[in-house]
Amino acid sequence: MKCEEIGNMAGKTLMLLPGTCCDWQTNFGAVLPELSEKYHLICVNYDGFDGTDTIFPDMITVTEKIENYIIENHYGRLDGAIGSSLGSSFVGQLVMRKRVHIDHAIFGSPDLDQSGKVAAKLQSMLVVPILTSFTKGEKKRNKTKQKLKDFFLMSDETAEKFMNCFSKFNPESIKNEYYTDLLTHLEDDINVEHTKAHFIYANKMGEKYLKRYKKYFHNPDIREFDMQHEQWLFGEKKYAKPVLEVIDEFMNMAV
Image (tube, rainbow, N blue to C red; front, side):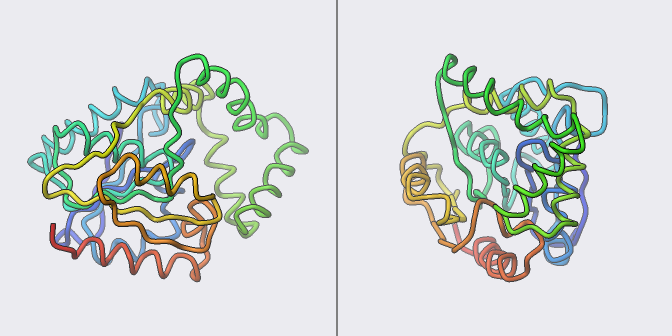
C-alpha cells in the first residue's frame, strides 16, 4: 500500500480512498485541483493497485494497514475521509472499528453490497470476468468503453483514462478486492461520538441504496443529487461543482 500526501498542508486532513479497480490518480483526478487548494490530502493506493507486484489480500487486512498509517502519521485522527464506491467500505470500517477517529466520514454514492460466502463467490464469478474481459481484444475494449460513455455520460477521453487504469492491474487483485468487499459487513445503526456520516446519494442508482445508508448509520447526513453512481468524478463540472460545495460544507460542520 502506498500513501501520498499532497495539497494544502495547512488545510484540514482529507483521506481519499478509491473504488474498485482504481488508483487515486484516476479515480479522483478530475477533482484533485479543487480539493488540493483547500485540503491536506492523504491519497491511498491499496496493495495490488499501487504500482508494485503485490496482490490485494482482503478488505480487512488493507483496512488495518490504513489504520496503522493514520496512527503512525496523523496521531490516529483525521478531519475527514471520502470513499469512492468500494472506498466507502473502508470508510465504514474505519468508523465502525474505532481504532482511529474520523470527524467527517464521507460516502461517495456507494452500493454497500454485503453477502455470504456462497453468494459472494457466485457474484464474483459473474462480475470479475466482465471487469477484466476488455483487456482481451480491441472489440471487447471498444464495447466496454462505449458502455462507460453511455451509462456515465463520460467523454471519450475520460472513458479511455479509466479503461487504461483498469487494464494495468492484476486480475487476482481485482478478484480479491471484489470478493472480499462483499464479505466485509457493516453493523446496523453505527453511531460513533464526534463522527458524522455523510452520504452523497446518486438518486439514479435507486432508493434501495438510500435505505441501506439509513440502515447502517445512525442519523446520516444524506445529500441527494440527480446523477448516476459517482458521476461527479468523471469530469463533468455540472456534477462535480455541487458535490464539491457539499464536501466543503461537510468538512466545516461542527461534530
